[in-house]
Structures are given as structure tokens and as C-alpha cells.
Image 1 (cartoon, one colour):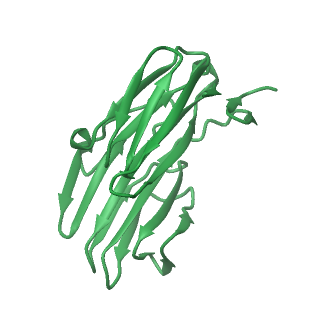
Image 2 (cartoon, rainbow, N blue to C red; image 1 turned 60 degrees about the vertical axis):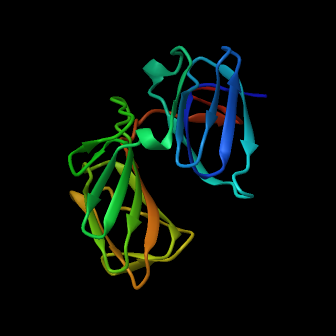
Length: 204
């Protein structure tokens, strides 16, 4: 069991299960391809218990800061199973839209304060995908299968590309083999950040 306060955790399981229990009496089981979106708010104590699926555990957990006005909100969480994650399909590409929107498809979660974009991109060999991004948003791409190119910059497997806060979007081009990557973006809050272990607040 461990505490959190002042931010949100976003857990995306590629393979394996994660069981959640918390001090509010909630319990859920996140399965392959599912997402858990938890708002710690004013504080929650929870546990995450991994359960392998055919010997594998793989996924991502990102922390998303909350605006100062929302840091003491009531804790909340939602399990979004794989079948509930909206998808967009184009020529040689499939995009799982976890948060924000892509190609007119609204994601499973929307947040007005931080305006997060969370996409899981599956590109066939030689395929490309373009995504609009608001100017000024922070954004990055992390490649976890194969390799991609952003303009003239190659992004190999297990590498992150941090995008410039300018322009109107990004074009990701696949290589000779299929690739998978996550594209993450959000609006900077421009507020002080004080992190101490599992707490992210504005002051010590």
C-alpha cells in the first residue's frame, strides 16, 4: 500500500493484469490492453498487484499533474478495458485513442485543465500517421516496437523524441518493419511543482 496526492496516474497495460485496491474501498482488475485512470486528488492510499498473462508483464504508467485548483479534489478512478478504448484505422495504421482525440475519434478520457493526448500507434511497414498538436503543448513520442522517423530524425526502439513546442502537428513515418509507439502531449500548467515521493503539489 502506498499514498498519492496532487496528480493523476495513467496505467496502460500492453500485456498482463494489474489489480487495484484503494482506501476508498474500490477494487478493479486491469487486463491486457486496458487503461486505469486514477485521480489522486487530496489523497488516496492504494495498491497495485501485478498478475502475469502467459508469463508477460508489459505496460506504461505516466503521471499527469493536476492544476492547483484541482489538487485537493476528491479521489477518483476508472478502469477502461481494452474493448472500451476507441480506435481509428487508416491506411496501414491503427491508433488507440486513450485520451484527447485523433482523426475525429474522441478518446476514452478528456481533461479540460491539462488537455492530454495519449495515443498508442500501430504502423505497418512504410505507413505514416499525422496528428495535429496545439502550439505550445509539451509532447513526446516513445517507440516500443520497431523504429520511426520524424522528418529527418530517426527514432529507434526504446528511445524518446521530445517535440518542439511550435508548429501545428507531427508526422510519424514507419520504416522497413512495423512499429508501435505512444504519442503523448499536454498543456503546460505554468505553475510551481514540488514533488516529494508519491506527492506532487505546488508548495513543500
